[in-house]
Length: 173
Image 1 (tube, rainbow, N blue to C red):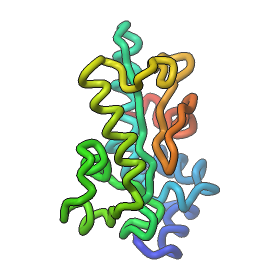
Image 2: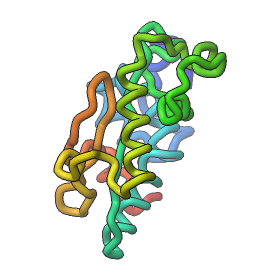
Image 3: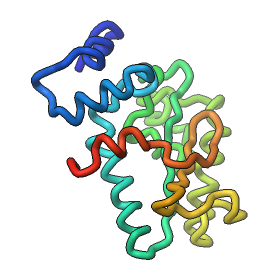
């Protein structure tokens, strides 16, 4: 998988014999959202789908689950439109002022509203068991609605935001 736009487009739009058919199907299904999902091949298999499966199993067993996805891309950051693994750490701890946050991810003061929202959700969850001050603002995840807090520039509850990827990966991971 290349890092230049033409290489990425070829990777997502041409059949490659060196990757499993599930990844091929995922790339085909997401081709129209190419810029948003540059790292889907790696992220879905390694993080997104396995974490979703944990939420599904916990909900199926009767547990209370709150599911979230960080899809925030740092404006002018080194990863372009991608939200890469680890970007949540400075947000969770509200520490955008560290060299790690600045140098690795490109965080600046402009990102503080997102950090404040993410940090508040974690503090609320630790203190009360609910990530939102009002439980209605962040409903529990269940297998019917699949309510997920998607944090991009703004945070919003979405129903089954990973539906296409989930269907493609079902039974494979």
